[in-house]
Amino acid sequence: MPDDDGRTAHGIRRAIRHGARRVDAATPASRDRAVDALRACGILGVVLGHWLVTALVAHDGGLHTASPLGRMPWLAPISWGFQTLALFFLVGGHVATTSLASARARGLTYGQWLRARLARLVRPVLALLALWAVVTAGLLCAGAPADTVHTLVKLALSPLWFLLVFAALTAATPLVARLHPLWPLAVVLHVDVLRFGLHLGPSWLGWANLPAGWLVPYTLGAAWTRGELDTRRAGWTLLACGTAATAALVGWAGYPAAMVGVPGAAISNLDPPTLAAVTFGLAQCGLALLLRDRLRRAMRRPLPWAAVATVNLSAMTVFLWHQTALMATTAALLPAGRLPGLHTGPDGPAWIAARLVWLPVFALVLTVCWGAFRSYEQGGGRRSRGRRGRVVRVHRGRVVRVHRGAGGGVGDQEAGAVPRVPRGPRV
Image 1: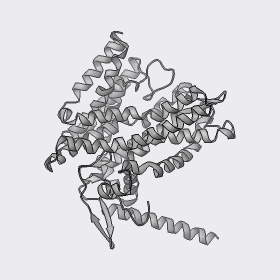
Image 2: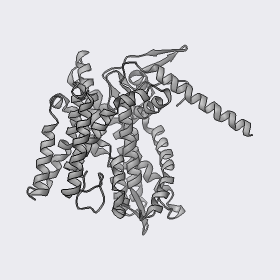
Image 3: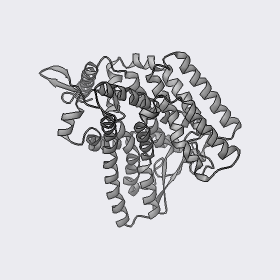
Image 4: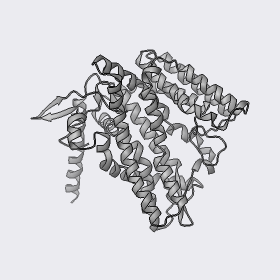
């Protein structure tokens, strides 16, 4: 039996290596793999961050949210590593401006380009909304507490705010492609001075920072496309200035140290974005730009590249369904009692240790969601995938590249989506 187990494990490793080499060989040489690596880092950062700082506590037959950052503020530095939304918008601005220029060179209109890009955002959203409409109706009919249903639905749909902003900025790409990042940064600065410095203006004024704050890294992505951020000096400038400004705002201006929302906190750096969140994003973008060459070298290896390509193929599916995976695990195991790290309140290091044990379970459930709903991101069916989504085809032992049309959403670069090998060993 041990020999059989050893042969099985060796066979699996061999199949994985073989599949990785096929994906590597099928990738166009012109593709900038650092862009995909940065996007994958952004996705995984958000997913792991939410799984670590979102707790669903079972109490009196219901569930309510809590955050370990509220009970353990010394964990705030942890949020710095997992608040990676600026990477989304940096890469999004770079990819959108590159894709628009390519579409125009091929004779496509702005409307054709925009419809193709937004379609890939809309399809997985419709699947999420449909499922949660059924789940919500089922919970209410079963007599679940209204507060619990509200908590679950709010968490499930919370990723949609990002997509709304991302879609709006994508639609405005021709207008903002040459906008200097200092202009939206100035808007955020003035709004925060009015809100926190002078205590003036209506309560909704802060929401002006929602588009303006994320427009800063988006326009940095456009500047990347124009070649204005190619030097290491640009990366170091963003990293140094962003870090210094964030430290000053947190240390002397009273901004929260946590770069994610904390329930019950007087000020949230993300809801809506504050100047501290934007300057933190500048530092993050600077670091990303400095790491581009190292990422390109690392992505030359087949195994890391295959992992990054897999994440990028279903970027929106992973992003949209990771909270559902957390909630499904929590709800499914409620009959087992209050399990540490899953149903208990985040009140100390023991909870953190227990939550780390649950992360692989969340990942497994997310994999199930990925298998069930990834087709909606890539075209919504076998026929559609074969017609538009396929960029690599295996035929009689040869790898044949197939040209893709206008391109879809956040998973695309100018050359098309991350290569997929539809047959053969799965990675």
